[in-house]
Length: 315
Picture 1 (tube, rainbow, N blue to C red):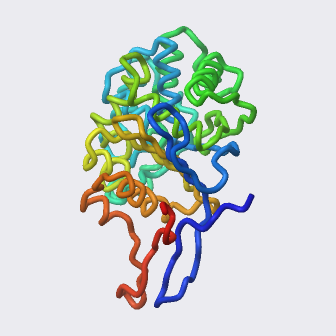
Picture 2: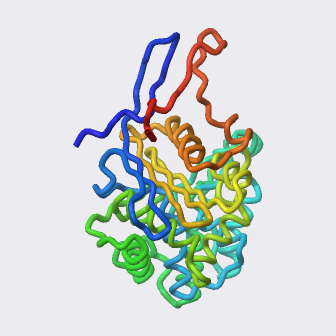
Picture 3: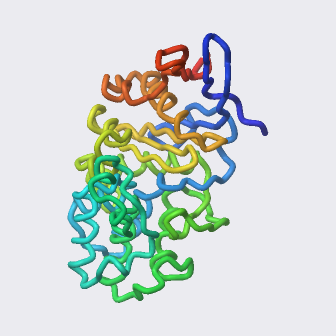
């Protein structure tokens, strides 16, 4: 099926560009409450699946503090606190930065990038270094090999795959490689939303611990000025995690959850949709989140249009 237009880019009253995609809202029991587009086709959830990967690590026996657990679920800015957190995780298991399989990168946070200069490109600054440090910590604590921990047939990745299948209630039939080098499992947007709802409604256990750690330490998940950090600071009890290629998921404390995918992968279309969905659900996302939406189209440095959610999307 051809997915519908979810977001329009309007310049001087003229629709200049459109972003198609799919979106699903699940009820606390995991049933579909609302959907638009194909929400059953498997997609790569990219970094939106990090909380699910973390559940797998805890199920395997990972011992970790809550701030480090949140960093392990994050796509961080590479600010000094993020880098130090990843290195500290590694040091406690006797490992160094060289053990990370994620590629070297500059910090996403511009002031941090400018501060470190050309010498600042390093593995610990890569936005997925927290996840990789948590994976290595799991392997070190359980006596598994740390040199091939991102191989799809490694015991860690098999455990994570089984955990994701359990949380999404879907079989994992397609395995790829994420941008950070770790295995990436495809499943539906419905499964993604359902799994987030399960995390926030769990009565204890690894699922609830991940949800609580992420919500208690939102800066570790993203960083200064980033949408997940801002949303979780402004909406009580919200669990939110975005991913590359236009993917995002969140869950409210009662288990109502959303997952969306922008077909062309455009990040700019995500936040307007997230905010519109929160408002549709009766939640005020707050002025700080509204200011982050970047929905103003400029011409000559002045506002001449907007990114707008398709009229009537929610009826």
